[in-house]
Length: 500
Image 1: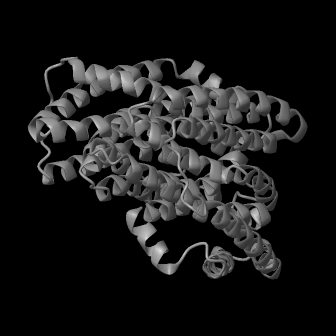
Image 2: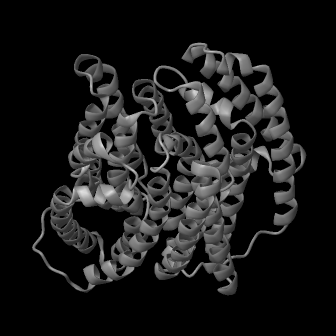
Protein backbone atom coordinates (compact mmCIF):
# COMPACT_ATOMS: atom_id res chain seq x y z
CA UNK A 1 0.00 0.00 0.00
CA UNK A 2 2.84 2.41 0.90
CA UNK A 3 4.68 1.57 -2.35
CA UNK A 4 1.52 2.23 -4.35
CA UNK A 5 1.06 5.64 -2.74
CA UNK A 6 4.71 6.60 -3.29
CA UNK A 7 4.49 5.63 -6.96
CA UNK A 8 1.16 7.44 -7.19
CA UNK A 9 2.77 10.63 -5.93
CA UNK A 10 5.64 10.20 -8.36
CA UNK A 11 3.09 9.81 -11.15
CA UNK A 12 1.24 12.96 -10.13
CA UNK A 13 4.46 14.96 -9.92
CA UNK A 14 5.34 13.96 -13.49
CA UNK A 15 1.78 14.70 -14.65
CA UNK A 16 1.99 18.15 -13.04
CA UNK A 17 5.21 18.86 -14.91
CA UNK A 18 3.72 17.84 -18.29
CA UNK A 19 0.14 19.08 -17.95
CA UNK A 20 0.09 21.63 -15.11
CA UNK A 21 -3.44 22.99 -14.71
CA UNK A 22 -4.28 23.70 -18.36
CA UNK A 23 -7.01 22.41 -20.68
CA UNK A 24 -5.38 19.00 -21.23
CA UNK A 25 -5.13 18.46 -17.48
CA UNK A 26 -8.74 19.50 -16.92
CA UNK A 27 -9.85 17.03 -19.60
CA UNK A 28 -7.70 14.25 -18.16
CA UNK A 29 -9.12 14.71 -14.66
CA UNK A 30 -12.65 14.35 -16.03
CA UNK A 31 -11.65 11.23 -18.00
CA UNK A 32 -9.90 9.62 -15.04
CA UNK A 33 -12.83 10.36 -12.72
CA UNK A 34 -15.02 7.71 -14.37
CA UNK A 35 -12.70 4.66 -14.04
CA UNK A 36 -11.53 5.94 -10.66
CA UNK A 37 -15.15 5.98 -9.54
CA UNK A 38 -15.46 2.24 -10.23
CA UNK A 39 -12.07 1.53 -8.64
CA UNK A 40 -13.26 3.09 -5.42
CA UNK A 41 -16.75 1.60 -5.62
CA UNK A 42 -15.54 -1.97 -6.11
CA UNK A 43 -11.84 -2.10 -5.39
CA UNK A 44 -12.09 -0.32 -2.04
CA UNK A 45 -15.77 -0.48 -1.19
CA UNK A 46 -19.10 -2.12 -1.77
CA UNK A 47 -18.14 -5.39 -3.40
CA UNK A 48 -15.67 -6.50 -0.73
CA UNK A 49 -18.03 -5.32 2.01
CA UNK A 50 -20.73 -7.71 0.74
CA UNK A 51 -18.63 -10.51 -0.76
CA UNK A 52 -16.00 -11.15 1.93
CA UNK A 53 -18.45 -12.10 4.73
CA UNK A 54 -20.49 -14.35 2.40
CA UNK A 55 -17.46 -16.06 0.85
CA UNK A 56 -15.87 -16.55 4.29
CA UNK A 57 -19.08 -18.10 5.62
CA UNK A 58 -19.28 -20.41 2.59
CA UNK A 59 -15.78 -21.70 3.27
CA UNK A 60 -16.55 -22.33 6.94
CA UNK A 61 -19.99 -23.89 6.47
CA UNK A 62 -19.89 -25.59 3.05
CA UNK A 63 -16.22 -26.03 2.21
CA UNK A 64 -13.87 -24.49 -0.30
CA UNK A 65 -15.35 -26.15 -3.39
CA UNK A 66 -18.84 -24.70 -2.77
CA UNK A 67 -17.33 -21.31 -1.96
CA UNK A 68 -15.39 -21.28 -5.23
CA UNK A 69 -18.53 -22.22 -7.19
CA UNK A 70 -20.33 -19.27 -5.62
CA UNK A 71 -17.38 -17.03 -6.56
CA UNK A 72 -17.34 -18.36 -10.15
CA UNK A 73 -21.04 -17.58 -10.62
CA UNK A 74 -20.49 -14.13 -9.18
CA UNK A 75 -17.57 -13.38 -11.52
CA UNK A 76 -19.47 -14.64 -14.58
CA UNK A 77 -22.50 -12.46 -13.88
CA UNK A 78 -20.29 -9.46 -13.06
CA UNK A 79 -18.35 -9.80 -16.32
CA UNK A 80 -21.57 -9.82 -18.35
CA UNK A 81 -23.12 -6.85 -16.56
CA UNK A 82 -19.91 -4.82 -16.67
CA UNK A 83 -19.40 -5.41 -20.39
CA UNK A 84 -22.90 -4.11 -21.14
CA UNK A 85 -22.31 -1.15 -18.81
CA UNK A 86 -19.00 -0.30 -20.49
CA UNK A 87 -20.60 -0.32 -23.95
CA UNK A 88 -23.43 1.93 -22.78
CA UNK A 89 -20.94 4.31 -21.13
CA UNK A 90 -18.92 4.49 -24.35
CA UNK A 91 -22.01 5.33 -26.39
CA UNK A 92 -23.39 7.90 -23.94
CA UNK A 93 -20.09 9.43 -22.87
CA UNK A 94 -21.05 12.94 -24.00
CA UNK A 95 -23.98 13.34 -21.57
CA UNK A 96 -21.95 11.60 -18.84
CA UNK A 97 -19.14 14.12 -19.31
CA UNK A 98 -21.63 17.00 -19.20
CA UNK A 99 -22.79 15.65 -15.85
CA UNK A 100 -19.35 15.45 -14.21
CA UNK A 101 -17.94 18.60 -15.81
CA UNK A 102 -20.82 20.97 -16.46
CA UNK A 103 -18.56 23.96 -16.97
CA UNK A 104 -16.56 22.39 -19.82
CA UNK A 105 -17.20 23.69 -23.34
CA UNK A 106 -15.59 23.60 -26.76
CA UNK A 107 -12.16 22.00 -27.12
CA UNK A 108 -11.96 21.12 -23.42
CA UNK A 109 -15.27 19.22 -23.53
CA UNK A 110 -14.43 17.35 -26.77
CA UNK A 111 -11.05 16.28 -25.41
CA UNK A 112 -12.61 15.07 -22.15
CA UNK A 113 -15.11 12.92 -24.09
CA UNK A 114 -12.39 11.37 -26.28
CA UNK A 115 -10.18 10.55 -23.32
CA UNK A 116 -13.10 9.13 -21.32
CA UNK A 117 -14.02 6.74 -24.11
CA UNK A 118 -10.51 5.30 -23.97
CA UNK A 119 -10.60 4.76 -20.20
CA UNK A 120 -14.16 3.35 -20.08
CA UNK A 121 -13.24 -0.33 -20.46
CA UNK A 122 -11.12 -0.14 -17.29
CA UNK A 123 -14.28 -0.51 -15.24
CA UNK A 124 -14.61 -4.14 -16.43
CA UNK A 125 -11.11 -5.08 -15.33
CA UNK A 126 -11.01 -3.24 -12.01
CA UNK A 127 -14.33 -4.70 -10.87
CA UNK A 128 -13.12 -8.22 -11.65
CA UNK A 129 -9.89 -7.37 -9.82
CA UNK A 130 -12.06 -6.55 -6.79
CA UNK A 131 -13.79 -9.94 -7.02
CA UNK A 132 -10.54 -11.93 -7.05
CA UNK A 133 -9.06 -9.64 -4.37
CA UNK A 134 -12.07 -10.40 -2.17
CA UNK A 135 -11.35 -14.12 -2.43
CA UNK A 136 -7.73 -13.52 -1.41
CA UNK A 137 -8.68 -11.18 1.45
CA UNK A 138 -11.10 -13.80 2.79
CA UNK A 139 -8.10 -16.09 3.22
CA UNK A 140 -6.04 -13.30 4.82
CA UNK A 141 -3.92 -12.81 1.71
CA UNK A 142 -3.42 -9.06 1.21
CA UNK A 143 -0.15 -8.74 -0.73
CA UNK A 144 -1.24 -9.45 -4.34
CA UNK A 145 -4.36 -7.22 -4.20
CA UNK A 146 -2.22 -4.37 -2.85
CA UNK A 147 0.41 -4.99 -5.55
CA UNK A 148 -2.30 -4.80 -8.22
CA UNK A 149 -2.64 -1.10 -7.44
CA UNK A 150 1.14 -0.72 -7.65
CA UNK A 151 0.90 -2.09 -11.20
CA UNK A 152 -1.41 0.78 -12.19
CA UNK A 153 1.18 3.36 -11.20
CA UNK A 154 4.05 1.40 -12.79
CA UNK A 155 2.22 1.46 -16.12
CA UNK A 156 1.50 5.18 -15.74
CA UNK A 157 5.15 5.96 -15.02
CA UNK A 158 6.41 3.88 -17.93
CA UNK A 159 4.07 5.72 -20.23
CA UNK A 160 5.12 9.12 -18.89
CA UNK A 161 8.87 8.44 -18.89
CA UNK A 162 9.27 6.39 -22.07
CA UNK A 163 6.28 6.97 -24.36
CA UNK A 164 5.41 10.65 -23.88
CA UNK A 165 8.90 11.96 -24.85
CA UNK A 166 8.56 10.11 -28.18
CA UNK A 167 4.90 10.70 -29.01
CA UNK A 168 3.81 13.81 -27.07
CA UNK A 169 0.14 14.08 -26.09
CA UNK A 170 0.60 12.97 -22.46
CA UNK A 171 -3.17 13.05 -21.86
CA UNK A 172 -3.71 10.31 -24.46
CA UNK A 173 -0.78 8.25 -23.17
CA UNK A 174 -2.26 8.42 -19.66
CA UNK A 175 -5.66 7.30 -20.91
CA UNK A 176 -4.29 4.26 -22.76
CA UNK A 177 -2.14 3.46 -19.73
CA UNK A 178 -5.30 3.09 -17.63
CA UNK A 179 -6.65 0.43 -19.98
CA UNK A 180 -3.36 -1.50 -20.21
CA UNK A 181 -2.98 -1.41 -16.43
CA UNK A 182 -6.44 -2.92 -15.96
CA UNK A 183 -5.46 -6.01 -17.95
CA UNK A 184 -2.22 -6.44 -16.00
CA UNK A 185 -3.93 -5.90 -12.63
CA UNK A 186 -6.46 -8.64 -13.38
CA UNK A 187 -3.64 -11.01 -14.33
CA UNK A 188 -1.86 -10.34 -11.00
CA UNK A 189 -4.82 -11.28 -8.79
CA UNK A 190 -5.96 -14.20 -10.97
CA UNK A 191 -2.46 -15.67 -10.85
CA UNK A 192 -2.35 -15.21 -7.05
CA UNK A 193 -5.67 -17.04 -6.72
CA UNK A 194 -4.46 -19.88 -8.93
CA UNK A 195 -1.28 -20.27 -6.84
CA UNK A 196 -3.39 -20.62 -3.69
CA UNK A 197 -5.67 -23.24 -5.16
CA UNK A 198 -8.62 -20.97 -5.93
CA UNK A 199 -9.90 -22.26 -9.26
CA UNK A 200 -12.39 -19.86 -10.82
CA UNK A 201 -13.67 -20.70 -14.28
CA UNK A 202 -16.58 -19.25 -16.27
CA UNK A 203 -19.74 -20.77 -14.82
CA UNK A 204 -23.24 -21.28 -16.16
CA UNK A 205 -25.33 -18.19 -15.62
CA UNK A 206 -27.33 -19.00 -12.52
CA UNK A 207 -28.80 -16.46 -10.14
CA UNK A 208 -29.18 -18.75 -7.12
CA UNK A 209 -30.04 -17.74 -3.55
CA UNK A 210 -26.39 -16.96 -2.71
CA UNK A 211 -25.95 -14.65 -5.69
CA UNK A 212 -29.27 -12.95 -4.88
CA UNK A 213 -28.14 -12.41 -1.31
CA UNK A 214 -24.87 -10.92 -2.54
CA UNK A 215 -26.82 -8.55 -4.76
CA UNK A 216 -29.16 -7.56 -1.92
CA UNK A 217 -26.19 -6.84 0.33
CA UNK A 218 -24.08 -5.17 -2.36
CA UNK A 219 -26.61 -2.76 -3.86
CA UNK A 220 -26.96 -0.60 -0.73
CA UNK A 221 -23.18 -0.66 -0.37
CA UNK A 222 -22.78 0.40 -4.00
CA UNK A 223 -25.24 3.20 -3.42
CA UNK A 224 -23.38 4.22 -0.25
CA UNK A 225 -19.96 4.20 -1.91
CA UNK A 226 -21.45 5.83 -4.99
CA UNK A 227 -22.88 8.64 -2.92
CA UNK A 228 -19.45 9.20 -1.37
CA UNK A 229 -17.97 9.51 -4.84
CA UNK A 230 -20.86 11.75 -5.79
CA UNK A 231 -19.51 14.19 -3.20
CA UNK A 232 -16.29 14.51 -5.20
CA UNK A 233 -18.08 14.55 -8.56
CA UNK A 234 -20.39 17.33 -7.39
CA UNK A 235 -17.39 19.32 -6.19
CA UNK A 236 -15.64 18.81 -9.52
CA UNK A 237 -18.77 19.67 -11.52
CA UNK A 238 -19.35 22.89 -9.58
CA UNK A 239 -15.66 23.80 -9.72
CA UNK A 240 -15.55 23.25 -13.50
CA UNK A 241 -17.16 26.68 -13.90
CA UNK A 242 -13.91 28.19 -12.53
CA UNK A 243 -10.92 27.96 -14.93
CA UNK A 244 -8.22 25.54 -13.68
CA UNK A 245 -10.15 24.82 -10.46
CA UNK A 246 -10.63 21.12 -11.29
CA UNK A 247 -6.86 20.48 -11.38
CA UNK A 248 -6.46 22.46 -8.13
CA UNK A 249 -8.92 20.08 -6.46
CA UNK A 250 -7.32 17.04 -8.12
CA UNK A 251 -3.79 17.73 -6.89
CA UNK A 252 -4.88 18.76 -3.39
CA UNK A 253 -7.18 15.76 -3.07
CA UNK A 254 -4.33 13.46 -4.12
CA UNK A 255 -2.24 14.74 -1.20
CA UNK A 256 -5.21 14.56 1.16
CA UNK A 257 -5.94 10.98 0.06
CA UNK A 258 -2.53 9.80 1.28
CA UNK A 259 -3.67 9.28 4.90
CA UNK A 260 -6.89 7.64 3.68
CA UNK A 261 -4.99 5.32 1.38
CA UNK A 262 -2.37 4.30 3.92
CA UNK A 263 -4.56 4.21 7.03
CA UNK A 264 -8.26 4.11 6.20
CA UNK A 265 -8.25 1.59 3.38
CA UNK A 266 -5.64 -0.60 5.11
CA UNK A 267 -7.58 -0.72 8.38
CA UNK A 268 -10.84 -1.28 6.53
CA UNK A 269 -9.45 -4.22 4.55
CA UNK A 270 -7.97 -5.90 7.63
CA UNK A 271 -10.78 -5.12 10.08
CA UNK A 272 -13.64 -6.43 7.93
CA UNK A 273 -12.57 -10.10 7.84
CA UNK A 274 -11.28 -9.87 11.44
CA UNK A 275 -14.56 -8.56 12.88
CA UNK A 276 -16.55 -10.95 10.67
CA UNK A 277 -14.64 -13.99 11.94
CA UNK A 278 -15.06 -12.95 15.58
CA UNK A 279 -18.79 -12.41 15.14
CA UNK A 280 -19.15 -15.78 13.40
CA UNK A 281 -17.31 -17.38 16.32
CA UNK A 282 -19.60 -15.78 18.89
CA UNK A 283 -16.82 -13.47 20.13
CA UNK A 284 -18.78 -10.22 20.07
CA UNK A 285 -16.74 -8.55 22.82
CA UNK A 286 -13.52 -9.24 20.91
CA UNK A 287 -15.15 -7.84 17.74
CA UNK A 288 -16.04 -4.64 19.61
CA UNK A 289 -12.49 -4.47 20.93
CA UNK A 290 -11.09 -4.75 17.39
CA UNK A 291 -13.30 -1.88 16.26
CA UNK A 292 -12.25 0.29 19.23
CA UNK A 293 -8.60 -0.46 18.54
CA UNK A 294 -9.08 0.47 14.87
CA UNK A 295 -10.64 3.80 15.86
CA UNK A 296 -7.76 4.71 18.19
CA UNK A 297 -5.06 3.73 15.71
CA UNK A 298 -6.83 5.69 12.98
CA UNK A 299 -6.95 8.83 15.12
CA UNK A 300 -3.38 8.36 16.29
CA UNK A 301 -2.16 8.41 12.70
CA UNK A 302 -4.64 10.78 11.04
CA UNK A 303 -4.64 13.70 13.50
CA UNK A 304 -0.99 14.70 12.94
CA UNK A 305 -1.48 14.36 9.18
CA UNK A 306 -4.47 16.69 9.39
CA UNK A 307 -2.54 19.28 11.39
CA UNK A 308 0.47 19.18 9.04
CA UNK A 309 -1.72 19.71 5.96
CA UNK A 310 -3.48 22.61 7.68
CA UNK A 311 -0.35 24.50 8.79
CA UNK A 312 1.89 24.04 5.70
CA UNK A 313 -0.42 23.23 2.73
CA UNK A 314 1.24 25.58 0.24
CA UNK A 315 4.72 24.40 1.17
CA UNK A 316 3.58 20.80 0.54
CA UNK A 317 2.15 21.66 -2.88
CA UNK A 318 5.24 23.67 -3.84
CA UNK A 319 7.56 20.88 -2.73
CA UNK A 320 5.71 18.12 -4.55
CA UNK A 321 4.45 19.66 -7.77
CA UNK A 322 5.91 23.06 -8.69
CA UNK A 323 7.84 23.08 -11.93
CA UNK A 324 7.20 22.78 -15.66
CA UNK A 325 3.57 23.59 -16.38
CA UNK A 326 2.67 23.68 -12.66
CA UNK A 327 3.18 27.29 -11.60
CA UNK A 328 3.65 28.97 -8.23
CA UNK A 329 0.09 30.33 -8.45
CA UNK A 330 -1.21 26.80 -9.02
CA UNK A 331 0.65 25.65 -5.90
CA UNK A 332 -0.91 28.50 -3.93
CA UNK A 333 -4.47 27.76 -5.10
CA UNK A 334 -4.09 23.99 -4.63
CA UNK A 335 -2.66 24.64 -1.15
CA UNK A 336 -5.78 26.57 -0.17
CA UNK A 337 -7.91 23.61 -1.26
CA UNK A 338 -5.65 21.17 0.60
CA UNK A 339 -6.16 23.06 3.87
CA UNK A 340 -9.93 22.76 3.44
CA UNK A 341 -9.72 19.06 2.53
CA UNK A 342 -7.44 18.39 5.51
CA UNK A 343 -10.13 19.43 7.98
CA UNK A 344 -11.96 16.25 7.03
CA UNK A 345 -8.97 13.89 6.85
CA UNK A 346 -9.72 12.04 10.12
CA UNK A 347 -13.40 11.81 9.14
CA UNK A 348 -12.65 10.02 5.86
CA UNK A 349 -10.59 7.44 7.75
CA UNK A 350 -12.97 7.00 10.68
CA UNK A 351 -15.86 6.46 8.26
CA UNK A 352 -13.96 3.54 6.70
CA UNK A 353 -13.33 2.00 10.09
CA UNK A 354 -16.84 2.49 11.45
CA UNK A 355 -18.46 1.09 8.31
CA UNK A 356 -16.72 -2.24 8.83
CA UNK A 357 -18.86 -2.80 11.93
CA UNK A 358 -21.97 -2.59 9.75
CA UNK A 359 -20.58 -4.60 6.84
CA UNK A 360 -19.35 -7.41 9.12
CA UNK A 361 -22.92 -7.74 10.41
CA UNK A 362 -24.17 -7.79 6.80
CA UNK A 363 -25.84 -4.39 7.24
CA UNK A 364 -25.10 -2.33 4.15
CA UNK A 365 -28.31 -0.28 4.20
CA UNK A 366 -27.57 1.87 7.24
CA UNK A 367 -24.28 3.30 5.86
CA UNK A 368 -26.11 3.99 2.60
CA UNK A 369 -28.79 6.05 4.36
CA UNK A 370 -26.23 8.06 6.29
CA UNK A 371 -24.07 8.64 3.25
CA UNK A 372 -27.12 9.96 1.41
CA UNK A 373 -27.58 12.57 4.15
CA UNK A 374 -23.89 13.41 3.80
CA UNK A 375 -24.21 13.78 0.02
CA UNK A 376 -27.13 16.15 0.29
CA UNK A 377 -25.12 18.19 2.80
CA UNK A 378 -22.17 18.27 0.41
CA UNK A 379 -24.22 19.26 -2.64
CA UNK A 380 -25.94 22.14 -0.84
CA UNK A 381 -22.75 23.41 0.79
CA UNK A 382 -20.69 23.09 -2.42
CA UNK A 383 -23.08 25.34 -4.31
CA UNK A 384 -23.34 27.87 -1.49
CA UNK A 385 -19.64 27.99 -0.55
CA UNK A 386 -18.45 28.08 -4.18
CA UNK A 387 -20.28 31.38 -4.54
CA UNK A 388 -18.19 32.88 -1.71
CA UNK A 389 -14.78 31.12 -1.82
CA UNK A 390 -14.75 29.33 -5.20
CA UNK A 391 -12.96 25.93 -5.35
CA UNK A 392 -11.96 26.11 -1.67
CA UNK A 393 -15.66 25.98 -0.83
CA UNK A 394 -16.03 22.67 -2.72
CA UNK A 395 -13.20 21.15 -0.68
CA UNK A 396 -14.60 22.50 2.58
CA UNK A 397 -18.06 21.11 1.79
CA UNK A 398 -16.55 17.66 1.27
CA UNK A 399 -14.86 17.82 4.69
CA UNK A 400 -18.03 18.88 6.48
CA UNK A 401 -19.99 16.11 4.75
CA UNK A 402 -17.38 13.59 5.89
CA UNK A 403 -17.85 14.54 9.53
CA UNK A 404 -21.63 14.30 9.14
CA UNK A 405 -21.18 10.67 8.04
CA UNK A 406 -18.92 9.84 10.99
CA UNK A 407 -21.28 11.38 13.53
CA UNK A 408 -24.27 9.46 12.19
CA UNK A 409 -22.38 6.14 12.06
CA UNK A 410 -21.04 6.57 15.60
CA UNK A 411 -24.46 7.45 17.03
CA UNK A 412 -26.02 4.36 15.46
CA UNK A 413 -23.25 2.05 16.70
CA UNK A 414 -23.62 3.47 20.21
CA UNK A 415 -27.36 2.81 20.10
CA UNK A 416 -26.66 -0.75 18.95
CA UNK A 417 -24.19 -1.05 21.86
CA UNK A 418 -21.51 -2.13 19.39
CA UNK A 419 -19.27 0.91 19.81
CA UNK A 420 -17.51 0.54 23.12
CA UNK A 421 -14.38 2.67 23.36
CA UNK A 422 -11.52 1.37 25.44
CA UNK A 423 -10.91 2.59 28.98
CA UNK A 424 -8.96 5.85 29.06
CA UNK A 425 -9.88 6.81 25.48
CA UNK A 426 -10.64 10.47 26.33
CA UNK A 427 -7.27 10.89 28.04
CA UNK A 428 -5.42 9.34 25.11
CA UNK A 429 -7.36 11.45 22.60
CA UNK A 430 -6.44 14.60 24.53
CA UNK A 431 -2.81 13.52 24.40
CA UNK A 432 -3.03 12.99 20.63
CA UNK A 433 -4.47 16.47 20.16
CA UNK A 434 -1.79 18.11 22.33
CA UNK A 435 0.98 16.21 20.57
CA UNK A 436 -0.45 17.11 17.14
CA UNK A 437 -0.72 20.81 18.06
CA UNK A 438 2.87 20.99 19.33
CA UNK A 439 4.07 19.12 16.26
CA UNK A 440 2.12 21.56 14.08
CA UNK A 441 3.94 24.52 15.60
CA UNK A 442 7.28 22.79 15.10
CA UNK A 443 6.50 21.90 11.49
CA UNK A 444 5.40 25.47 10.76
CA UNK A 445 8.71 26.90 12.04
CA UNK A 446 10.64 24.31 10.03
CA UNK A 447 8.64 25.24 6.92
CA UNK A 448 9.55 28.91 7.42
CA UNK A 449 13.20 27.87 7.60
CA UNK A 450 12.89 25.86 4.39
CA UNK A 451 10.54 28.25 2.58
CA UNK A 452 13.18 29.59 0.20
CA UNK A 453 14.19 26.09 -0.92
CA UNK A 454 10.56 25.00 -1.34
CA UNK A 455 9.22 28.03 -3.21
CA UNK A 456 12.30 29.64 -4.73
CA UNK A 457 12.38 27.66 -7.97
CA UNK A 458 14.92 25.05 -6.86
CA UNK A 459 14.95 21.64 -8.55
CA UNK A 460 12.76 18.74 -7.48
CA UNK A 461 15.48 16.85 -5.60
CA UNK A 462 16.20 19.84 -3.34
CA UNK A 463 12.50 20.52 -2.75
CA UNK A 464 11.73 16.89 -1.90
CA UNK A 465 14.77 16.69 0.36
CA UNK A 466 13.71 19.76 2.34
CA UNK A 467 10.10 18.58 2.51
CA UNK A 468 11.33 15.15 3.60
CA UNK A 469 13.34 16.70 6.43
CA UNK A 470 10.32 18.70 7.61
CA UNK A 471 7.98 15.70 7.48
CA UNK A 472 10.47 13.35 9.14
CA UNK A 473 11.15 15.86 11.92
CA UNK A 474 7.41 16.26 12.44
CA UNK A 475 6.87 12.49 12.62
CA UNK A 476 9.73 12.09 15.09
CA UNK A 477 8.46 14.96 17.20
CA UNK A 478 4.93 13.52 17.27
CA UNK A 479 6.16 10.01 18.04
CA UNK A 480 8.21 11.18 21.01
CA UNK A 481 5.35 13.33 22.31
CA UNK A 482 2.68 10.59 22.22
CA UNK A 483 5.02 8.30 24.14
CA UNK A 484 5.93 10.98 26.70
CA UNK A 485 2.24 11.84 27.14
CA UNK A 486 1.54 8.12 27.61
CA UNK A 487 -0.89 8.00 24.70
CA UNK A 488 0.76 4.81 23.55
CA UNK A 489 4.00 2.86 23.84
CA UNK A 490 6.53 1.49 21.39
CA UNK A 491 5.24 -2.05 22.05
CA UNK A 492 1.63 -0.99 21.40
CA UNK A 493 2.63 0.76 18.18
CA UNK A 494 4.42 -2.33 16.92
CA UNK A 495 1.41 -4.51 17.79
CA UNK A 496 -0.97 -2.10 16.11
CA UNK A 497 1.00 -1.98 12.87
CA UNK A 498 1.31 -5.77 12.79
CA UNK A 499 -2.49 -6.04 12.98
CA UNK A 500 -2.93 -3.47 10.21
